[in-house]
Image 1 (tube, helix red, strand yellow):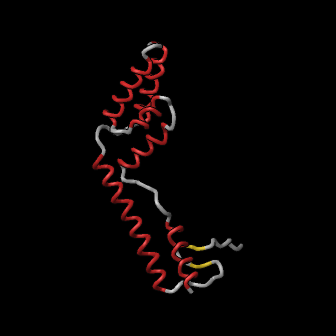
Image 2: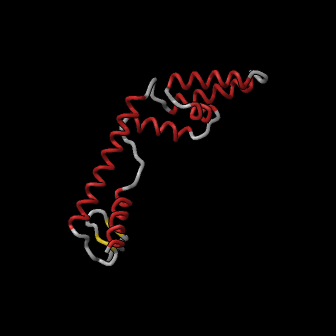
Image 3: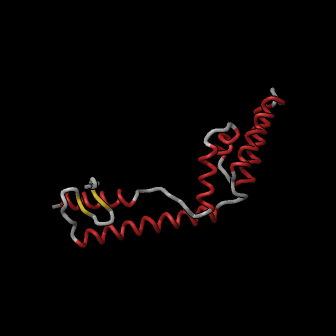
Length: 146
């Protein structure tokens, strides 16, 4: 059974017509991939060093969201002021942004924020271009140049 071939394969750097890239292009791809990985690691280390407070957990976020619901019911007229106080407490305690605190109190994107801070804590930052995108970009530049 024959496997379908992807446009460019990072491991062997084969272009869809079966033609192999020259060694210097492969070296540029490997260098760019290594640089990208190094930059992501450095970003993760910097974000972890800059983090102040405790690490946000799902349990903590859910607790604050529940408190926000209680405030909404108990303090009808003073709800916004109480919510602001709760948001500021959440920001100071867990080192999150104002927008993140507001969304957590409203129960929005909680899993995303918890995952974001878990990844920072464990130095698992992702982002930027994938290895495949880097490979495709350099291969296409080379092919356009010839």
